[in-house]
Amino acid sequence: MNIFAIETSCDETSASVVSNGLKVRSVVISSQIKIHAGFFGVVPELASRAHIENINHVIWQALSYAGINFTDFSRKIDAVAFTSGPGLAGALLVGAIAAKSLACVYKKPLIPVNHLDGHLYSSLIENKSVRLPFLSLIISGGHTELVAVEDFGKYEVLGSTRDDAAGEAFDKAAKMLGMSYPGGPVIDKIAENGNPEAVRFTRPYLKGSWDFSFSGIKTALLNYLKTNPVRNEKQLNDICASFRQAVAETLCFKSFEAAKKFNLKRIVLGGGVSANSLIRKIFLETGQKNKIKIFIPSLIYSTDNAAMIGCAAYFKQKKCGLKYDDVQLKPNPSLSLENWRL
Image (cartoon, rainbow, N blue to C red):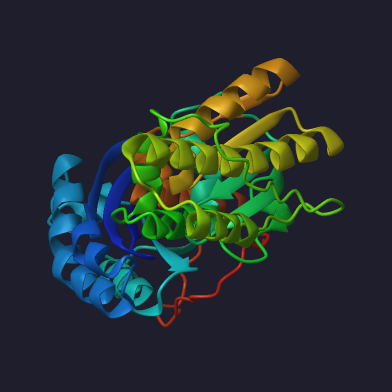
């Protein structure tokens, strides 16, 4: 089964052709980082405009790389999927309109996909050995979610962030340190040359809860810089290494405690922050020590991409059936992770 998928939830315009959920025949991603860098964050209006400018070309490229053109779309594509939320309203609308148009013109089923479902299953694309049930940690600029996955579309959200998401904490820390946007990759790179024990930032474990909180780490950094302004490269390296260590340890501690509590032998990471080199290293090392298998998507599937939407769409239709959804279906910017309706 070939699914043509579109992802436009935030600042990446992406399209992909996915066969049987796990074989990516093409994936194209157009990033908007240069557009938003000067504002040190995504500007919704600019994001929507960029999606409008990029969507047609991205769709054409994804089809072309998969050896498909518009004349044989009807014969070679079985369904169209798109991100229905959560995300920026205008950005979501661009992808939804494009997907609805294709589904309507070529008379194909339309599969709305939760963006978080995409991150949940992104590791399956390259790791066919992933078995259910598993614990999923979704970490991105807008989300930090700890989810027990019993079956496809059957979840229990154990915890989420009470304030800043992990990626947001990295971005804000980078801004305090005078770095460029997005902050996560910059801090990750600079931290490689620093001492992670140089500064002891708070670890907000929130005992008795599986929730996360990163505002405390952010405030601790702000207070530290007030009395210890950055004066040289070594100090900057050490601060970045220490901040990265605090975030990574917090994520790791919560995840493994939850895995032990609920007797889950597999942890699956997803989201842009899972690209962080220390987070990947700590999870893999801790997993080996605790005999818990760790699955982390490669960098291209860690960040927002349409291949993960196509993957999730395949398993959704397999479990719930292929339905011809109403083209009036509207995207939901505040959509939460919820069980699939059979």
